[in-house]
Length: 578
Image 1 (tube, rainbow, N blue to C red):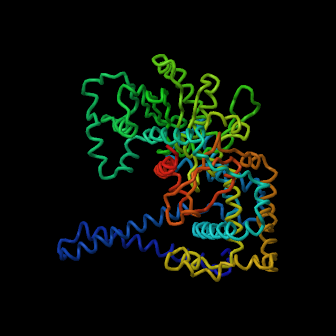
Image 2: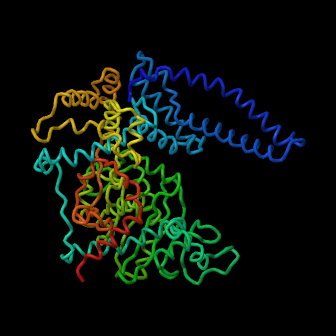
Image 3: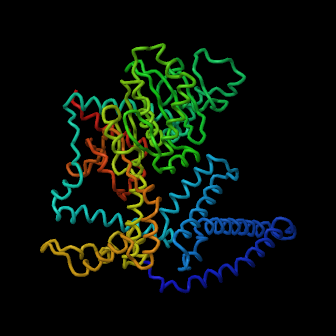
């Protein structure tokens, strides 16, 4: 796949195509003028056809320009220059990524906060994409091959090696005993409070989940032109919602809360500032603090700032967490303290407990905020639905075991994403595409349902291990040596840059291990005892170390959705003995 000999004439074709782009644009301009301004003497049918052709051509040209800008590598000449110092190449890459981040965020203003954020983002991107002389189709093919390799290893290689080897490296998950009252209560609470995390997203998620009926359900809750209408009789504080209070309407519908149950609903969404709401749950006698997940560009930037940030926790020395979420938790804690929101909530119901929860980004911020608030609220509970994998240090993960419950569904990608896991995935993708001897067109054809057996003879994994004799063949030995060479940076083309990276402070920055917090409930489909029933789930008590590998699966994105978690929890709660 990385054999450049077969593609050596591609640059000439690209330059030739670029040469013909200039007359193509000129002809398009002439066609636009003729069809829209000077076509009075032509038949209407011909004019319509020409207009459609001109508009289509402009769209294709625009797409080609945007696509070229996105995939163009301005460091190509630098990579070809072997005389450049590795540190200089890395600095140039950082500058390119910093400029891209600014353009993407539409921000030309530079201040100390923005500069620090863009620098951190540039460091992450420059590190992850170092020495990756690949195109998007290479990455797609590598992901597909890596998925096949993971499936093959699970089916043949791991049983062949034996389970004792696996147990010695990773703790074994334990199935949740639903007959045990304490364990079943945890599952019931997780299933109960997830509706509040769902409600934090407001009307967009409600419309997505109830596409056809949402307008009819939301309309009675709207307050169109609410600024001209009499104020509500309740004391609910609504901040930064639109004039019709659409988010607040979605919040009430999703949670089933009334105006008197909601103290504050804030929809301020800036960098490190997430929407949240505080409400009463009188059935459980709890004060609910729910934090919204990712829904904006500012939220995405917070997600990407995954470098370790310091957390000042009394009794702990130099603890760390996801930088973007640590800063968001600190901002929210300061806002709660400054405006006295939690004090106001508990002044009316002093015997209530505090529950902090959220989904995705909101789950990460909720978990870190719970750690910061634990000393002030000893009875605090936190339910983190699909939190990011690289969230807190192992010391804080163990510390939060008694008051944080993290919920993971299936092969959820986000719960396995951390800088060290992404570094591992990067190495494996490069390894896969550089050692693969299969043409890309065969790999993509194998991804089609009608061509699923197209690559069965070429995939090559079956030849690596002889299951009958238990011996690895000679060709596999050669490939293993090649893989080790690539993974450890011993390839001649990359050795110098990898040595620089291994000796730099950046390596320490991105390789600091962060984990999921608290107790982990892993919801897994039961495909062995119920192969035909895809809705059958089991719940397991898992461990942070078990999420140190990104599994490439078709459901890795859908498993992150709240709807998947809610569906899985619904099936599991049915198994609890009455």
